[in-house]
Image (cartoon, rainbow, N blue to C red):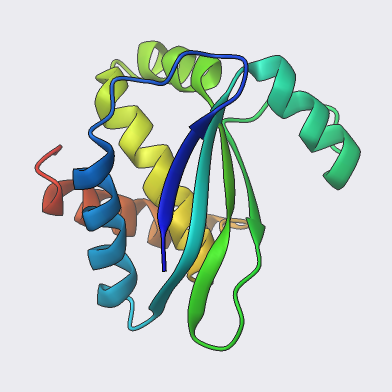
Length: 140
């Protein structure tokens, strides 16, 4: 089980990788799941748009695309996160960039744990979970 961090066409964000990996593992455990291999790839809007178009047939910018490879109770997958979108969202919501970056990371992990956000009820549940885990990390 490994939590790995990479960057494509952007600088690696100011991000404490060992502490974030431990937080992700605690989150997965709190969701009664087992941590598998998870890769978190920080990239640009352009890079993520290409992935969104190629693999999901979505022609729009997004902050994250999650590919779930988990089986049974094991959480595994790739999270592609647009640093550009995170910065824009932080400015839009008057949030700290570090906090918004962690929110998007945990949002992706929650998707890998089986949560969705395709309707209002699911979005509310997802936001509550994000806030819970951001508090756990000391970011709220």
